[in-house]
Image (cartoon, rainbow, N blue to C red):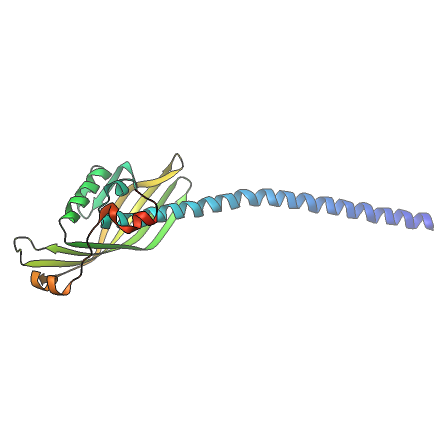
Length: 209
């Protein structure tokens, strides 16, 4: 009787040990399968954050007329299509931007509605850009154009040597409105902050030179 109980007890112990061993092995296998997935998800999140910051740098650089910052957003050979106009390189587009905005009395840009999809070292994004521009009316020194523009940026990105940058951008215009304002009204009723470039206090805040 005692031997029978001992055999049964031994069987239970061995079965339990086998179960624990199997469960432990299953846990290890599960952990090994989860770790690469988590690493990929983390990389995707970090990539999206890096691209988001580059998107936000675009209006900041444009409103400060900071050519170097604008150039840092894209790969040198990045293609640009602005409406029906195309540019052979990112630097050509940046030079056109700087010239056009330098001639304005004031400009303010915003980026919103950012959607990004990342696949390895490639990504695409769509974002909405809004701009308020105050431009002297051509041929009429006593009048300004106040322009409201809503656009979307359709972008492709790639990561090279660990760094994300723009490969191409297509700007789609969704809305544009122009009002004419006299120079006298602008002087009396408008307050337009001067564009200080790198003397803007935000550069000191971020420790930039």
